[in-house]
Figure 1 (cartoon, protein in one colour):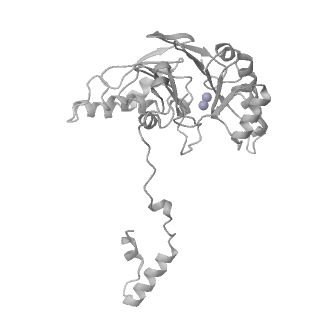
Figure 2 (spheres, helix red, strand yellow):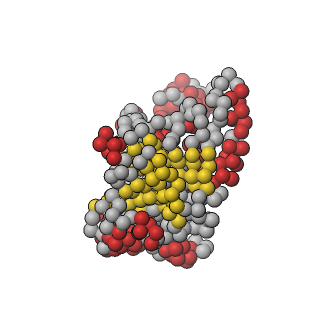
Figure 3 (tube, protein in one colour):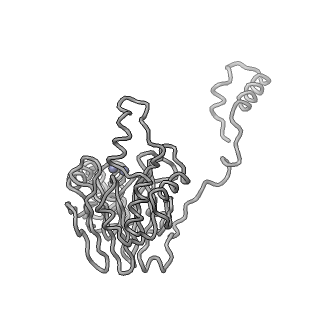
Length: 331
Ligand SMILES: [Zn+2]
Ligand SMILES: [Zn+2]
């Protein structure tokens, strides 16, 4: 332990005995170093969570299972689909590029990226995605699909980092001259990608008062995966999820929903019922759609436990496989 600061708190003119006493009192007042503090820090690997077989069929990786709450073990909402040598990203929550690296995915660009909607928890990692992939060697734009407003957001972000981009290109760093730009496609829903055995459809869903909010249906030769995005109960998601192999759905524990103790907090239950989907509602939807696996992610917990969420899904009628997503899980 380095203690140079102790010199500053020992009184001037103190005798040697005084100094020793003073130092020992200060040392005694410091918290003891616990074994956890001196142990080697936790290391993330860059090992792929997908097996070769999963990658061949299409492997969905949870990059971030979190919410706006900055939980240390949950990055902001983001998912990766790895299919053969193609990499697709859905949403760009906080910490996205660290999780891309932790999943052993390439860090210098993607086949395509898609935004569900423009809430900040789903887009706050967008400058990271744009700029880090470029700094790491990306030479050309990749397609970025999102709702109306995506282009303005990207333009503003690139403008905000214009000085960084200029210095990296014109300075001795000699950055890739094409810059961190992407090709933005604003959609109102429908098929947004159909190439090399991957079809991706944007599904309009009811969420906050943006011009548009999407879930996504991913169709591969042998797998069908649905991401709900942020949504209230949605018949369109239910239809897309018919016979799906995986339904990743946002949720909250119904039993925990009550007014909050703050100005306007009496509206909280009505707000949640309108723009999000309870565990029991996910259970009902999944049962009617006949999905094979339900993954709850982006959960507004309100203190709810995994067991409560599972019970909620069962109460809704779904008796099949259910997982509570954790970062770097793969399905
Ligand atoms: Zn949202
Ligand atoms: Zn959200």
